[in-house]
Length: 193
Image (cartoon, rainbow, N blue to C red):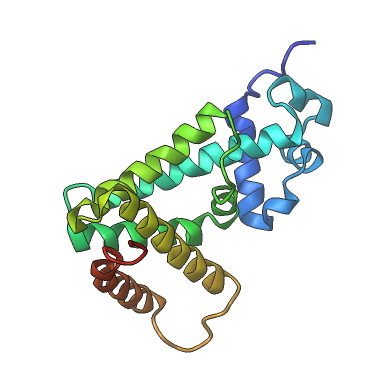
């Protein structure tokens, strides 16, 4: 049986990302994807390795899209400006692609090289942005964990309607990132001894 003309892996991933953004990641099923594309579910197996394979491809695609937004935001800037720009891009991605963003939160699967590479691109970008603070290799990784926790917490609360007060969320984000940056100096000494 030959694959349906015009149907390829990239098309499946894009369609699945649309479902995830519109209805949430749990709505991404092979039946829902087949219905969206007007094909029978078995024909999807010509291009993907089941639902788990599709979700892995979605995670890779999501990480690539997040990296694209973040790297564009930090192009030509460094230090505090880069951290603010990168953080805003992260939150903007989560706002515009909520389902796809959710796929990026998975821990990398062992020995899944494409997924690791996509995640490492973002990690490298964040490390580069934090070089200005002279934290050392381990300190940069701790700072990245902290920043990622801040950004994910912020996006999760916002997405769930947790910011009900009539305040500009972007101003809140900017102040939060400024506070994080101010605290980076203290990170140099914490945990040593």
